[in-house]
Each structure stands twice: as C-alpha cells, then as structure tokens.
Image 1 (cartoon, rainbow, N blue to C red):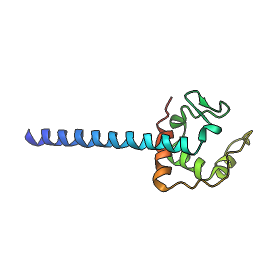
Image 2 (image 1 turned 180 degrees about the horizontal axis):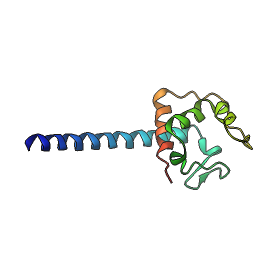
Image 3 (image 1 turned 60 degrees about the vertical axis):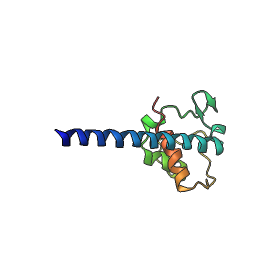
Image 4 (image 1 turned 120 degrees about the vertical axis):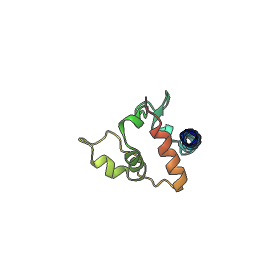
Length: 112
C-alpha cells in the first residue's frame, strides 16, 4: 500500500511539474510570436490579420507540421491541394532552437 501511495505521489508531482514547464514554454512561445510580429499576417483570438487565423491550429496540425510551416513554408505549401492565395513568408527566421520549440508549443496549444 505504501508503495502505491508513493508511486501516486510521484506521478502527481511529475505531472504537475511537466504542466508548469509546458505553461512556461507556451508563454515563451507567445512572446516569440509577438517579437517576430507574426500578427502582421496571422490572427489569434481576434488580434492580427483576419485573413490567416491560427485559432484552432493545434487541433488541425501536428507539432511537426507546425514546425515545418515555420521552417519550410514552401515545402508545406507544395503539399496543399491548391496553391494558397498568399504565400507564407520565405524569409529565414533566425530563431534559436528553444524559441522555435516554444513557438511550436504555443501554436500547438491553440486548440479552439
């Protein structure tokens, strides 16, 4: 019984810690989104360019696909059934790996 309680407490603590880390990563990603001026072309929660909303993107795309849209937009556009009306910027984003991962985590958190 003592072992079961110990395991349950460990799982709870690890889960709470992971949730806190995820929240920090998501918040960091939101700051990257703002710093990179993504709202110039995209909209989230009514803020930004209404032509290309990202609300719900986390429900539609995997984290790998979100990352590919940021790092290789032309490759992702080529996979679409028809060409987009406006292409995603092909400029190279000089994001550190941690910033890219945080941005992906933020976008992946957008489920609705």
